[in-house]
Image 1 (tube, rainbow, N blue to C red):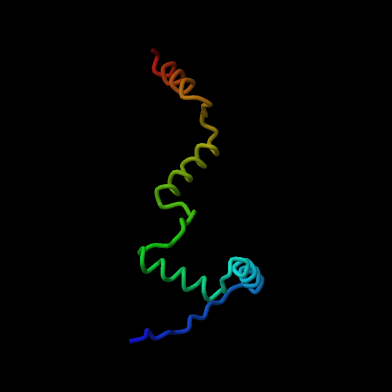
Image 2: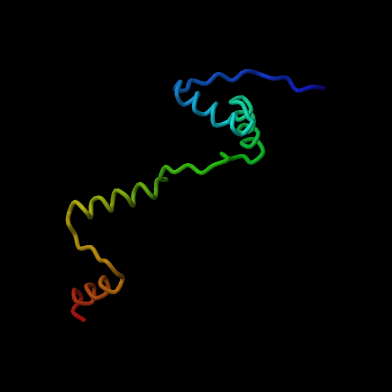
Length: 93
């Protein structure tokens, strides 16, 4: 039995679509081919076929903490040794 097909409609910037179509054509693919490959990989791998670069919740907390350190102008250290030396001086050792 042949698989039935369905249409997928996506809103995308006109320039992005044109540039993608040109790039894909240079690879011998259409935009529809690329979308089929993408969706097939998502189904097969149960994940996106590329890494997203947005920070996760833990990273966002660390970034916020780093921004607070910068705003408060707390000490910064170029090396681990300078950090350890400062800690030893502060503790009286």
